[in-house]
Length: 169
Image (cartoon, rainbow, N blue to C red; front, side, top):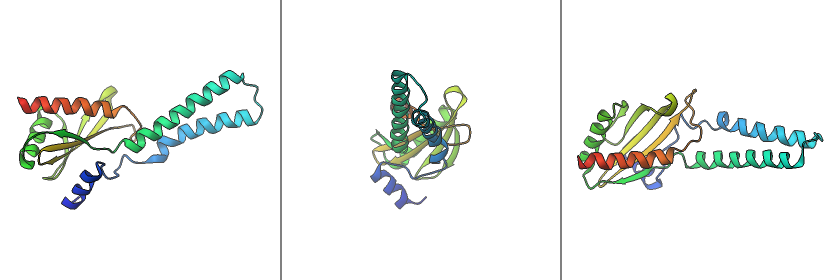
């Protein structure tokens, strides 16, 4: 990844696709559940109407939630830090060392860390230092290195607060 690709990602506020963007393995379970329910209804399975609509509504909601999180999972979260790009890069490196994260990639334009997250899941953290800002993206890796939807946006905001506190120390 070169400087122009980094600038494109920052202007789009979205990281490029990577190994976590395999759509079908995560999507097929919800499609399968919806297809099964529709098949049961079409075959005249005598489900109670209330329960059929409740299950259908719940699975539809989960499907929409999956699509929403998959479409927004690569968004970059900006953290305002009034330092130069080089100082922000050094800050990222010391922050990652303090958190005891495994550094996966270290480049002057971006840094990728991996850490242990909730329930032993691996989290991939992408940080891009810029003048006056650090952009970050956090995604959870699952059993087969595919990202399933999760509440990573909340984790990103928490991580941004930790990063801001780290800069004051």
